[in-house]
Length: 74
Image (cartoon, rainbow, N blue to C red; front, side, top):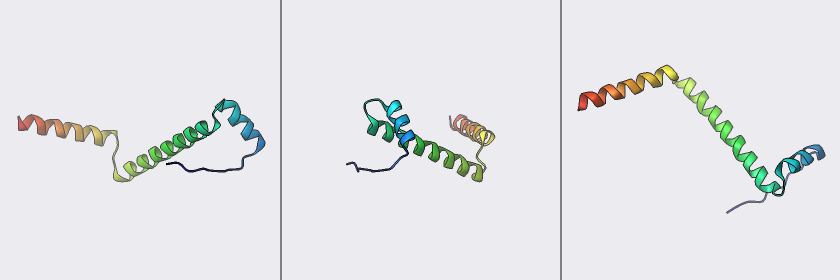
């Protein structure tokens, strides 16, 4: 399923988009929107990790703890 979206853009932006998109402006715009959404979700996940205190050191400590538990279970 898909939805149609109509937007107004300035002439200069339209020209730049059409130049970049080539023959398929709709596909190019969809890909640009998806890219933006992925970047925003990534940024929000990093904010959440920071609030939870999850950083490289925490991840390393967790990995080591899992490895110790696995070795002890053998």
